[in-house]
Image 1: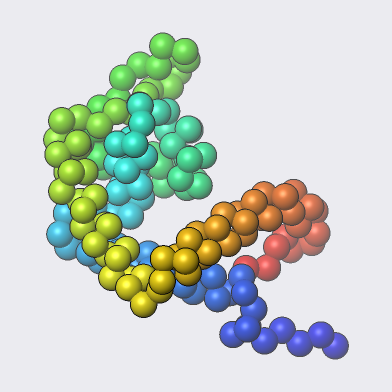
Image 2: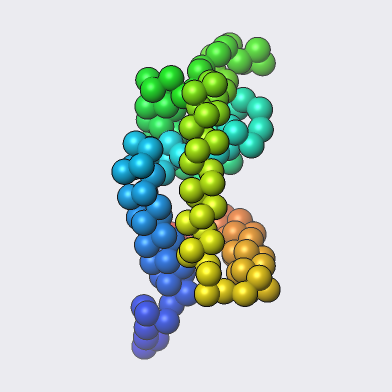
Length: 158
């Protein structure tokens, strides 16, 4: 019988690390800015580029459509994003940051970078670069095996 040592299982360790970091960040964003993590992700993505549909935001952030929709509604209610008709598809809307959304981003982004610096203060620049590169490789590996993994009963094991 094969034994799985959960504490040594890398997908589990990655999930724990992700959940721990996300929880800490969520607490800060909520207490300082009244933002949940999905809302902040949408603000960031929209600040980095042009307007996007909710579907495109879901792909970019790897969040499901319900989470994206709820975050978009919350941001629109706060006047941080505007939803305009999509010229390419009248059934969808394009989200853009409002001036208030851009002002919020200008305040929150430095705090996010400060938190990143604190989180990785014990890592050298080379280690941070290596970690970033390795995470990208993990994402690529998942993309390559995801369809095959889903063919197996029970799907992939986290």
